[in-house]
Image 1 (spheres, rainbow, N blue to C red):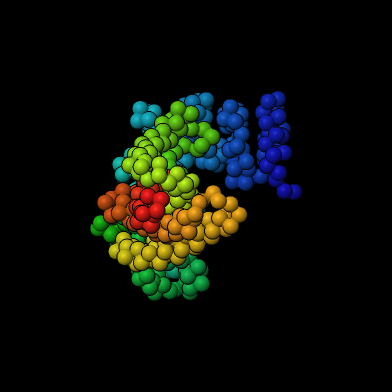
Image 2: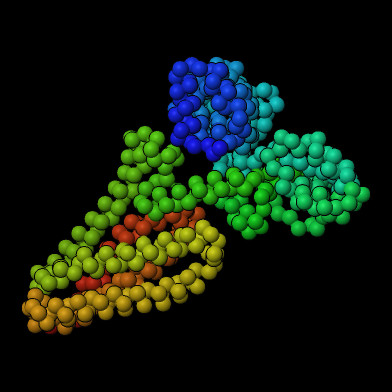
Length: 461
């Protein structure tokens, strides 16, 4: 019988409200904790606290791992010290590190005191690594065998020590000093003869990470080598942990979310949109809005500089929104494409000229397309009205040429600004689409009125 999340949550909530612990225990018994944990994690923490007090430790630990950091913290405060300690000790080291890292220092230190000496040492060691580093993400639950063992000896060791490991897809081969020699997929052990030396299964083709590597670098390595897990190795070659693909999926999601938020002209939110305090969200968004607003003030300054031209040819003002929005849109397109390509490693900074050449061609083509549309729009309207006067052809020429120049300029700005920011050590995503659009608005006006002065000089100007 399939497990229906909505019905199951409602049923469990009712049983908890009625304090019917016997029926609750019988209802949960047929299901594995890993199956029901994601469903239970969506329940209010007040109900989870009751469930955790009366349910099994395994179910509590599985469900606790699915909660976000804010819910974890609130739930721990509702439990006894012994119950909270049990949950923290059962949490995977990498998940526990991420949770403690997100808490204020004073609270994190209090929770560290609830850990057993062994788990506390692990937590302190992982927290000592830089934030967002591989060291904070790694888990110590891996299996390593010796190169001089036989497959039979290795399999015996795996059976004895592999039960509580996070993954057994890959078995690591080390020397007597614990230095990593290779990683071998477990299926090779299963298919080999028992008498085969482990060394015979090695091919020397493996990748590794340093504990001080940034998580973005780890993501690139995972994509490149397509591994379920990667070992974390110290400078002297010793393996100290592993990073698994499920952690990388979380990193990929977080990085993509952060980039999208920055592209929208906001600081990255470090909490879910629905739970982040309103004041904190306003502060995250206000900074960029102020910067962009001040930038847009330059647009008014640029227009005031061309006040005389506008007074002589008021018709030019009709096309200002069209002109500047086209350049901003082209710049936003280019910035988005380049930032995403950088994130995926499709090219390096040294390939900037290749990117510029492509945007020169693309920007020119797009500008010609929009320029022709703008020219034809004015020409067609002039057949049925006199809105553009007797010099409609010159106005259409001005708009057409301006669109070519502005779209080309917007494409170049949108593509080169992320590379420039990357080159000086900033996050390319901070050259957000609104930021690029604001810059192109100001320069677009200068291009537009400069073209108008050249084309209309001696007639309207």
